[in-house]
Image (cartoon, rainbow, N blue to C red; front, side, top):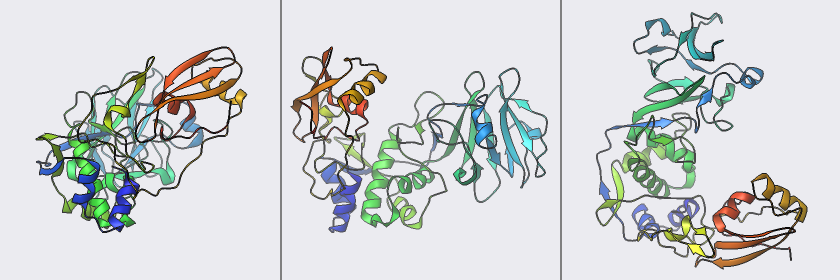
Length: 372
């Protein structure tokens, strides 16, 4: 599903069922029990409490009170106090109470998962979240979360913050993070069902969490960005998911499809003397999408020298200059499947997704201009 396309279709009078059936071919809307809990990693990678730079740019990681920690009454923090986190001289993660006057209680070494509960109706307030690839900041970048917060030790001085909450409450933090609330109720309902379907397919994964709170899975901002419109879309579609031939689908979606969605076999294509396609999923078939009128984008321009340096920084040394790029194949949507990169000392063939990674393109729907 294209989110911009869903917006255009909703504005054109399509309801959420029509929007979803267009983007996910041959699917139907089913109902699933969503009363269970979901575990959300608030950072893509564990937070290293021993890194010195957070001390230069802001206070230590904390969770605001009032709160309690299971099995550790000495870490109870009253309103106005907080639970702080740091590393000790042995390089172990620690937690301690910071009172309203700034004084610290005795630190407790985190050797097993801390489970934190807040008694505030406004939820858990913390500055531990996805900022700069797994680091934390404070001030305006604090967020609030429903449910409980787990602090999971991951070795050394690193910890992983995990928000545990009911599925439908989680979705109320996803929909406004993925789609503006003014885009229309039908688009928001389509987004809610796509997000719910995607999330349910990942519940119960092995490890400490089910999904990440970033675009690695789905954007999630907790209670902070919730709006009445997006909450109503979640409530109005409660339990609804998409299935294909009786099975829950993987409901991939994107900001914009550039006017044409991509079939599943091309989504993660590789190139080895020709395209190496994935299996086709019947519900992810490329379609023309005139309702997606998102602005076009431009990356570059790159000089021949600059492009060579960029490639070298990503581990591909073709010499001092990138002489030219030859498009070897495009798929039906117009996206690049494979290209030949001609450098001053070496020539290689790579897939479209690899080209996207090297140059930072938002998509493989590219038109390469210039060069020889």
